[in-house]
Image (cartoon, rainbow, N blue to C red):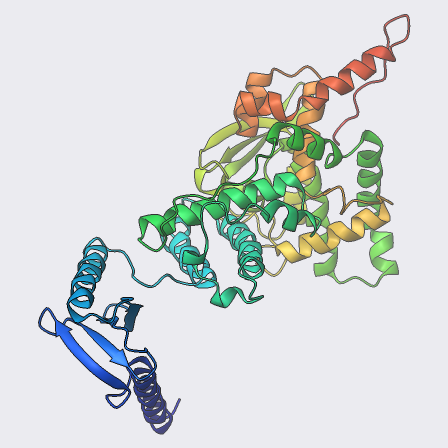
Length: 443
C-alpha cells in the first residue's frame, strides 16, 4: 500500500468514526431538555419525540456507545432518582468486568474461537483439527440463532436475546439437516462451553442452555454398529487397496510417481489404522522417530510412542501392536523417513493433506463397491472401530485393550458392547463339534 493510499484510508476511517459519533449522539436541536447527573457522567433528556417522558443516557467509553433507556416518567425528581439507580447498576457491571452491550451470537462465536486458538491450540491443549471441529459445530449454532431470532440473520441476534431454554428446538433443527443424535449431543456440549465462557467474560447472563435429554449410550451403540465395517466389507476394501496401488493400474491411468505414492499412503493409512487402532489425528501426526518395528513369534509388531500433544485425550501412551510389516513396507517406499519426518509424508516433503486422504477414500469406497458409506458414516475412524471390535471378539483383555486405545475401560465396554452381540450370534452358529470360522485377519 502506497503512502498516499494509507493517508486516504486514515482519512476515510476518521470520517467514518465521525459519522458514527453523529449517529450515536442526538443533536442539541433534537433535545428539548437535558439535566446532567454525577458531574455529567450521565444525564436525563427529553426529545421532540419522547412525548414529555424522560430518558436516561450514558456514554460507555469502553464500548464506544450510548446506553439509552426510557425512565417512564414525566416528573423530573422521579426521573433523576431512577437515572441514578441506572447509573450505579451500570457502574457495578463495568467494575466487575461485564460488558453493557451484549455481542451478537456470531461475534461471540468468533471471539470464543479466537480464545480457544490462543489459549488451547497454541499451548497444545487441543489440536488444530479439534479446533476446526469446534468451529464447524458453532457454525450450526450461529445459523440456528438467526432462525430463533426470526431475523434469518445471525449477525443481528444477540446473546442477550437467548435465555436458558431458548435452544429447545436445536435438536429438531439439526435432525432436519440429517444430523445424527450423537453429533447433535457433541454440538450441544460445544455450545454450552461457549455459553460458560461468555458468562465468565461478562458477556452473557446465562451460564448454560437447557437441551432436551439425548441418551448417549444407545445412540453411540447404534451409530457405532452402522459406522463399523463388516468382515466382508473389510475384505473387499483390502483387496481394492491392492488393485488401487498396483503398477498395472498406475500404468493404465497414467499416474505420476507422486500420485502413485499418495495412493500408497492411503493404503497404509487404512491398514495401519485398523492394526494399531489409533485415532485419525494420532496417526496423521505420527513421526518416524516414534515408531520402532520388531519381530515376535514370526510376526512383525511395532512399538509406537503416541505423544500427548497428538492425542484427543491429551495423554501420552506407548503401545505394542500389530502392523509392523505395514510400517516396514511404507518405510521402504518413502523418501522421507528421518526421525523428525511425518510417517505419512508425500514425495514432495510435505505431509499428505487431509483432502487427499478423504478424496482417495471416496474412490476406494467406489472401487470396493461399498454402498451407503456416507449415510453410515464409514470413515478412516471406522478402522479404529473395526480393529477394537475384532480384538474384543478374539477375547483380548479389555483392560489392556483400553490402554492400547487410549480410552477408559468403562467407555470401551459401554461403547463396544455390540461386539458381545456378535459373539452371541457366532456362538449360535457353532457346529455341534464346536468349530467355527477363524476371525478375519486385519492384514
